[in-house]
Amino acid sequence: MRMRPLVVAALLTALAAAPARAADTFKVDPVHSSLLFRIKHLNAGYIYGRFNAYSGTFAFDRDPAQCNLTFEVNVDSIDTANADRDKHLKGPDFFNVKEFPTASFKSKSVKPLDDKTYEVSGDLTLHGVTQPVTVRLERVGTAKGPRGEVRSGIETTFVIKRSDFGMKTGLQFLSDEVRITVAVEGVQQR
Amino acid sequence: MPDETALSLYSQAVRAGVVLPALVAAAVLLLTWRPWRRDLAPESTAWGAGLALVAGYLVGHVTVEGGRPPWPPREAVDRLWYLTFAAAALSLLDGWRRCPAWLCWLLRAALWLGAVWLLSLAALRQSRGAAVPMLLAVAVAGLLFWAALAAVARPLPGPALPLALLATAAGTAVLLYRCHTARLAQLAGVLTATLLPVMARSCVRPALMLATAPVVLLLPGLWLTARLYAYTTPPTTSLALLAAAALTAGVGCLPGVRRRPAWQRNLLAAALATLLAALAVWQVPNEGGVDTLLRSGHDQG
Image (cartoon, rainbow over all chains, first blue to last red):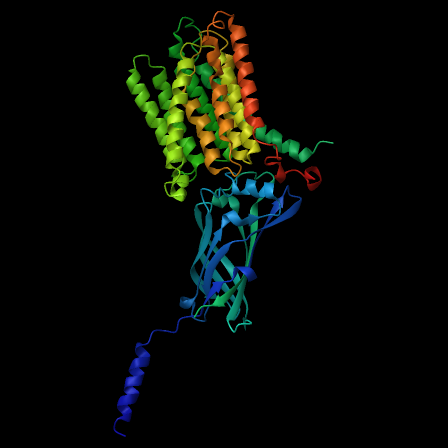
């Protein structure tokens, strides 16, 4: 019986010394994710395109310090359903893929707005230019997959000006503003 | 019925990429003309032509790109713009008759080798050195091209060389357009536009000798940039034919042609250059170039 206070004290000390619980990290599953963009053509209509190859991780928690999001896109995977146009977009006129093969986003701060919505600020690097962007991101849901793995989804839509990233070709016939939608499903990492 | 939107876009591009650089080059040529010195040695006129080409290109590049390239330069195209200033300095040397030949060639070699290195930075990084043999070949070929062009420029003051270069630059613009890069094609168009007043000026006395530095930097510089970064790579054959087109002015030095009247020699050089440039363009199939951004699906079908 005399040992009990000692055991309790030891347990409390151990608990206090333990690191804070890290948020669950999810790895992007490209099969169940989409990265889309939309641009206005000749001020008459919209063209949609997508990127097919990307990777990244995300972690969200009630504690903002535990949240982070990183994303890297292989720009060579651009796909607008027209091979000629894709060649043009990959060339020096737009993405200049051979000089800048990747685009990336790295979060710097995450602010929970409510249970499902976060304001994420970070650096977007595109075409060799890094600019700060802030996006409103929604956590779609979390569920178990067929193999028992835990899956979680996020989605955000935001607008950038391509001229801010040094892509100024054809501003007369393709809008400066590009709407980007990132809908990602991630698999929890063990 | 013509597409009015497309027509207005093309006319904007023509104003920015053709009219303005041509006017700037013409203004510099007028300022450096010195028509009262009809006895000037052709070498003494080279710097004026060089500065005209450089000024026209610098202004045209900024207009086409929608602003001055960033500093530090980010892309090969940006670096080409900054390198043009060095070409201006070398143009002044071309007009300085007392400059020792070895110094001229040392500086020319430094400019061209520096240009090859700066334009290919990204390609070198991504190929992890595999591109080095190709770039060494480009460096040597560029120096040989410069030597040949300088050899043609010196004994042939007058319109023969500007005519040949005009055909070459115009051919380059069409070729790059077919290689899916309107941006580089427009920059080649800017160079073509700046050559127009140079060609016109070279028809009147005092005879004009062309400074070679801007041409050697910009033409092969654009070829190399397209070769490294365009998504439809310009074929080596096309680039070799364009280089040959630029040198066709040299036919005026050949025995049998040398004694013919100047207008016949110039016409022959222009015709040969146009033929070679057309052959260079013909090597790349016309898949619509960059028109996919403007044409409708019906047009493409």
